[in-house]
Length: 305
Image 1: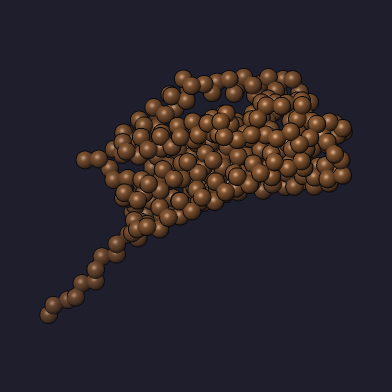
Image 2: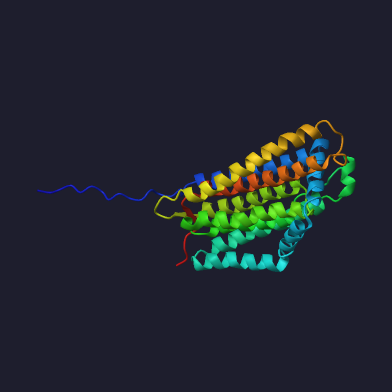
C-alpha cells in the first residue's frame, strides 16, 4: 500500500517581487516630500525662522564644556574618515559575498553627502524674513555632517545580515542622532538643517536599496521581526517625543505672539533648543525604525559564487 507523503514545509518566501522595491521607493518619495516641507515651513516662513533662530540662540547659551565636546566630536567627521567608512561598507559587502550590495550602499551614502552639499551651496536659499537671521545669516540647509552620519548608519543597516540589522540600527543610529543633535549644540546648524538632512539621507539610501532589491532580494529563510531593536528605538522615541512636546507647546505659543527671536527670554531659548534636539531625535529614530520594518528579513542581492 502506498503512503502519500505530505510535502515538506518550506520557509516563507522572501519578498522577491516588486513589493519591496516599490515600498522603498514610496518611502524615499515620502521622505523627500517631508524634507521639502521642512525647508518651506522652517526656512521660508517667518514663524519657522523665528523657531530656527530661537533654537540656535538657545544652543549658544549651553555650557561651554558641552559645546566644546560636541564640536570635538564633529571635527572627527572629515573627508578622510568618510572615505574610511565607505571602504568599510564595501568591505562588509565583500565579506558577505555581496560586493554589489556593499558598493551600492557606499554609493548611496556618497550621493547623500554630495547631494546635500550641492543643495546647500547651489540650489537652496534662505530669505531674510526676520531680524534674528542677522546673528547667523548663512544658508545652512541641509546639514552635511548630519547627512554623512545618517546615510552611513542607514547604509550599515542595509548591508548588515538580516539577523544583525537591529543591532546595527541601534548602535549606528545612536551615533547618527548624536551627530544630528551635536551640529545644533555646537551652533553650526539650525534644527531645519539637521532634520532636512536626515530625511534626504534616508531617501538616498532607500532609493539605492530599492534598485538593488529590484535585481534580486534573497530571503534569510526565517522570520526576523527586529522586536528588541524596535523596542529600544520605541523607548527612545517616546521619551524624546514627550520632552519635545512639552517644550514645543511653550515655544510655539510664545513665538506666535512675538515678532522675532532676538527678544526671546533665556527660558524660551532653552526650551526651543531642547525642543529642536528632541524633535530631531524623534525624526532619526523614526527613519531607522522605518527602514528596519521595510527591509524585514529580506537580504538584498544574490551572494557571489
